[in-house]
Image (tube, rainbow, N blue to C red; front, side, top):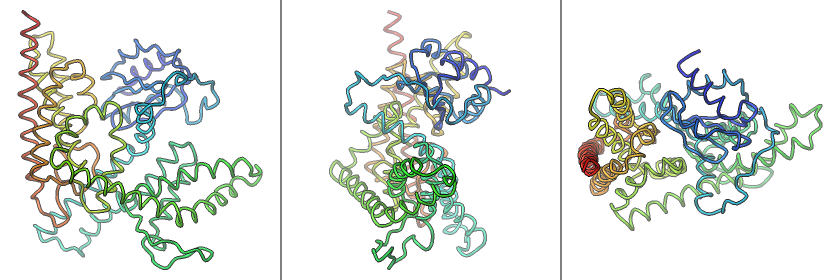
Length: 466
């Protein structure tokens, strides 16, 4: 076994055993374990999980903060626990929501819990596609790379695989989240981006005209289609004779879903994408550059509650609609850098031999956060230090003000924004104008966050000593 053997066995021992586990997934940094009965989980012991920066309690879902190597932890936990998809699906589930008010927080928790497993598995494809596109733009505009060359075509193929075919990836992961065969959702996404459908004019089905829509890089159309497919699939599977269900169920499901998707849901999803994009631009035009510091300051808490996952489709829709995003483009970038700088400030205040190991751990958390992954830093070093978080907010506000005043725009959607993703600010002409602005924002954010966090921590320490 590997690095996470002890972690996996510890979790299994204190989560109520494999018989209490109904689902296991992960996002960029967290191992997400759903249980049937929360009462069987030793929550106090779970706070001491080895190789973990802490846990997040989401009712029947316990999120274990691992960090960038969460995929290794996920696979090792599956090997050691023996849990497989569908296991314990019929287990009696404790109702933890009986006395819980269905307020805004409850709604946001539900949305966040659904969105994270849909979009986080796609992040590597987004990172590769976005970076390759930016590199190709620089090569074409500054180094004489021929747009018709094999090199340029391969680069654009990598971008297309990550973004143009986005409906396929979203269809697959959303189907998995809804617990219907993943290939159904991927198939629907492939239909949308098929050259016979995507952006083609004059189509009809049984005499019913099909609106002309370009589905490449879109999100909402396929999400609406898969959601509709969930109900169709459940109904068809229920009434289909078992002897023919293997081939008849997918056939009947697609015959029903695809026309509805192309005639109604796809165009509706495109309309929603445009409406969301216009609403976001209205917000920016109404509040101006003030939106940037506000969003950057609250972003760490959006990550904390998982609300940030709901922003990804909005940002993707804005880039697909108008070519860039200047509303939500910078909040994650600025916030992640601020968290990293504050964590390094915390590490710099730790003195003495007994704090040597903790200082090294926090330093690694800080560097990881600067690169875009903040959960270990936020939960491991900052959440128990409110004074340090004040410094984080100061840096985020300053960075947000500069970004808002200078009009910083993002042209490529990437997951885990940070110092490693500057190239998402290269525009469609290969200009580095916004990259330089992003560098100025990053430097200001790091300096202010580090200095303010250190000052607040030192002052708090002096007060405690007195």
